[in-house]
Length: 533
Image (cartoon, rainbow, N blue to C red; front, side):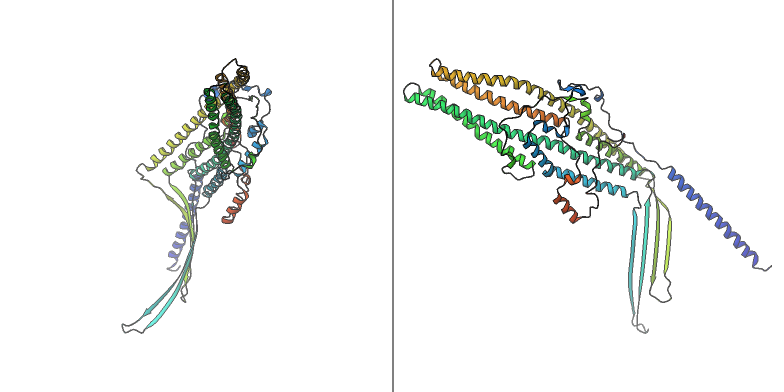
């Protein structure tokens, strides 16, 4: 046995024990890491649609307009305006859904939220994947001090690939995806709500235009009647058979009727311009309005089957409000995750060298876990959680208020439909009586049994009665439109190709690589699972 044997044997023993210890430590680290993975949790509340305490017990027949579903005539709420059987209105609403700029903006918000969802989804993967490198040239010169002058230089180069992956132990990134997902569905429901509003607005403006046009026609016809009366009284006055008072009263009434026409023409132009803006056009004559019907439509009474609450909760604005609650609910979990350490896996792969002869190139590899824990935050995290919770409660309250306001709108619109229909029956009879009274007044005046004042009163009453009948008929149509708007009718599922004109899509693809986003189907925000709105 040599004197060097024991130390060598001891070194081997130490190396074996060190290797065993290192393997044990590595296995323990892996086991601990796996346990942490198994113990991963998602912080914060899971979304639950806000409760509306009175909704389950709310029962109304909408003033007799709710019938047994088996008795209901088929009526598609998505295209309720077809009940008016007016091809001009159908074309106008189709144009609005194709060309309206507000609706296009709502479609672009869907694209925006879809991109935000993509950003949130990327957080599931390594957040840092960075390649860096540098090349440096160093030149040195030596002058004076008795030494020989000399020049020298070297080139150094290095490259690194760094990787950092924060693991989603506390559900921060899962909650972020959940929040972005809900915001995406909010944008879809909001676009559908814009469809509801624009469909109703287009129909409202169209029938307001037609009603104003017919009011102008009534005013002109009554002015013609009053002009003939003025001519008759003027002839009688010239012949010495009447006083000047009759002439001046007839002139006053005739000119008063004429004075209403310019005001109505201002209203007509304003309504036309509003409709043009809705169609995405500048103020101008609208070709589609050149061949309008000569009367307002007579619409059958509204009959709805099913419980009204079902219609209320399916309104797109109510769905959008529910998705906003879901968006904010996930923010609480994101805020709570700041209480806990951010645990990451980090790694680096590097290489460096120079062009100096005899200098070796150096490469290095590093990998391991890391954590970052903000232990002292002086209440920042706690108050941020409170902030997110307060915002959630605000949105819950807003949702409940929107449901309440939606019920009010449906009830208001329903009674308006019923009562304008009842009033119309009275006004039709009143207009018929006023017309008969005018005929009798003219006859008695010609035969000398009554003075001209009776004729003037009858003319005034006939003008007012016919105009009130027309205006109320327009109000009845507006009430029907308001009712279908209140129940959330007038929207249909649209693809992004339908939401955005081809010119817009081409302009966007010229600027940016949109990949498949412009062709991907838009999800159904009403069929996202029992835990979703």
